[in-house]
Image (cartoon, rainbow, N blue to C red; front, top):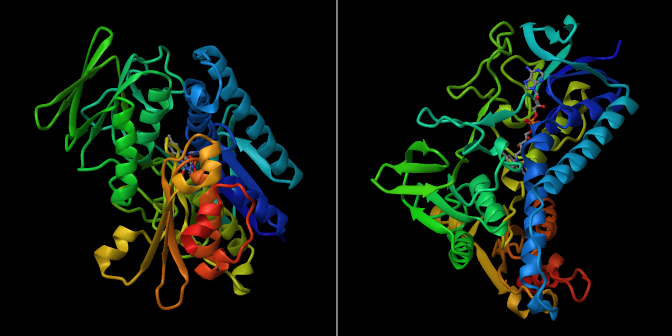
Length: 453
Ligand SMILES: Cc1cc2nc3c(=O)[nH]c(=O)nc-3n(C[C@H](O)[C@H](O)[C@H](O)COP(=O)(O)OP(=O)(O)OC[C@H]3O[C@@H](n4cnc5c(N)ncnc54)[C@H](O)[C@@H]3O)c2cc1C
């Protein structure tokens, strides 16, 4: 009898596990309360990047003179923007639904919870359905963290999920939180022409990133007129009519027309019956997992944001694929675990930022011996053709072996270009392998070989 796998949540972790496990012969059921594709498609990655792409089109128009064009003009069509986001989501959702159907995966619409180690109950629109499982995957994702000092109203005080786009385009947006999500929203709304103030609780934006990379973004924000409140921790938001005031712990107040909370997320692990199944959660509600994404109960897996690893769609999807292999017993063969330290990450701002592997600052802090080479895009022909020579490529390698350990790219298409370095890092390639690779001319990628030389 095939292994019965029941998956709670149809986001990247859930749907990738489902299609792969079904392909490998498992009998798979996905329980989804909303849409397959998950929050990733509905709220997070896709709508945010769709809005950023529209903002980029506007910025391009503003920079038309640099491309040898007469001045162009453009404005945001909010309804058109909403239609565009919905159309992309619909298309992606349909593609996943078709894929699941092609693989014979059953999708049950409703909210699921464990009632024991091998049983799941689903509250569906028509009643309840009981499912028995040999293996269960908890892939229920996460939701925006709302602190007790804020009450989002979906109108002027927003979570990230209420900003695609908000009912009224902000005249002056105060963004609270300067991690990846926060700075992407700053960039997005600044490119739509809004005034933006960013409340930065630490001493630099993107506190977990290489300081040189963060500095490049801060410089660009300041050039665009974004006001940075460095070292200010928000402690309250007041609304008066169509104005908001964000109070900070040092007495400063940021005033605007809208406030947006971008201060992280919390796992969707409550109400899942994890107790009933004997599954442990940590103090924040994440389900701790081993290298196979198994919880403390061996046949109950957790993948994606709820597993408390890197909260990225790409990581969730990779975990899903690995879980599928493990569920059907393929780990007995040659099997590569997910190496979270080698996951590339991008920040979709202008300039775009992407990083993979060991960062220069991190190696410096730990005293690890590294070789760092860096070239600016200002010497790259394609960057000049694009009229955008901002940024640089930095490669970190092992001075003894020449192995590529990591890299940072700041500049146009950084998120695409990092794929080359991600491959090098994941496959233990050496800088000489990058140097010896023939690339297209003219291309931004040529800066990678130049940096590797
Ligand atoms: C604003 C923003 C932008 C982002 N942009 C990017 C990006 O550009 N690139 C990137 O890699 N990552 C990005 N992320 C992170 C990414 O969205 C998450 O890491 C990813 O969605 C995690 O996937 P997942 O499968 O864990 O869960 P999700 O995508 O959250 O899916 C979980 C699913 O489980 C369902 N569910 C929950 N509970 C139940 C239940 N009891 N029963 C049935 N169904 C249930 C939910 O309805 C949901 O569909 C972004 C995050 C945010 C907040």
